[in-house]
Image 1: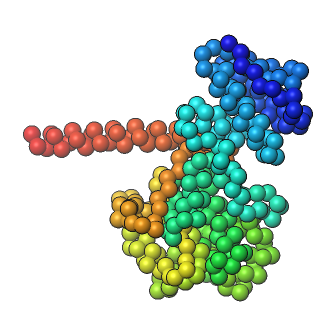
Image 2: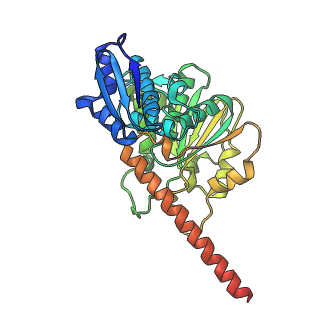
Length: 336
């Protein structure tokens, strides 16, 4: 069975972008779908068995659309587009990547690249408090900072406040040299990186000196009321329930709050309860508060990161299942 796409009206640059360097993208599609693809005389032919030719045509049409809009067809985008077709979710990348939040200092557009990221960005636009929960590489912090910088430039808010708990990632670093700011800067470096990319180092420095941008440990939030600000709490899985409650009760009038976290990367002491977990149970269903869950499909780093995240998710599900069965046996043995 063979399906065909007429590409006679498209430029060579678009066709080349879809085919990839040395036809790498074509080879990827052929391997994934078990098809044979040829490009001749203004026609792309997709040959295969069953549904594979139709899926191949759908995938190539979407890639042609993206390329015609100036998008780079990199490995991540190719893989995500393929996965969207494969699971027949009905939620396609077509309407996702049109919403540009802002541009980096290099002029690169910052926008959602997956359906999960699109829901996350929409929630930030709509609700006062948004929890973005998901694995590393899903853009939780970066997209939140992009929204904060955009709101700041439009004068929708008067300041940006970024915070995270100062907890070592499984290591004891001991006493760090320097003043207090020097001691906490290493914990806040990812936030600085995102601000530099979206705002520029000079603009960041000037606004920081004016007190319009603040990057500080979570402990600094106690006792404050934060009005007319865009507030981002990063690494929220490392908060205690008391810290989370303290932070949420700082919210003032005209403020927007985004809380990001990854439940699989907790650095709390063994047996300690995460404030992020408690918050989802306590605040679920309250109007004006959204919980957006991102998954391995929303990872926008190297495709290998997506595979790593998925492998850990599967391992943790199996491990949790074994633990639940073991606990049940212990309770049963105790009862008997």
